[in-house]
Length: 132
Image (cartoon, rainbow, N blue to C red; front, top):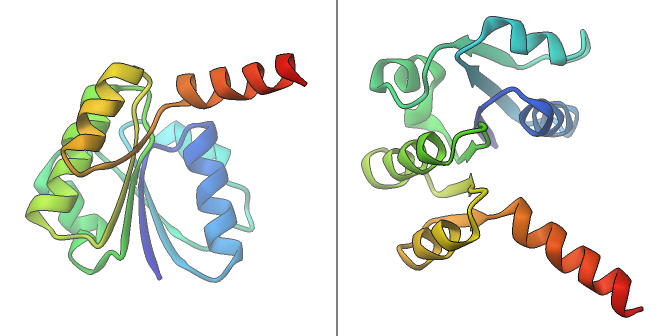
């Protein structure tokens, strides 16, 4: 499977390492080249420095052949924009988008994006612990 990850922060780098270890073809895109320092020497995938909301950067990262696109930067707007481009323009079969704001997450989920909100997930987990 060809996986393209936008954002090499804690989540993006961990996901990249996990998918790479499972034998997938992984490319990580980040604006900051220092972010790739989170990837261990064992990482065999690719890295692309640039803004993944830019078509030229997406093309150089191989979006045309991607099976999966994951947007996990710190910015909801960038994640939403890049996810929509991946889904609607490049027809990537599976697009996953992190959106911190639960209200926006619901709106874009209803518009067809596969979204998750860490805020909602964590709230549910804490609630479950309290109710045990």
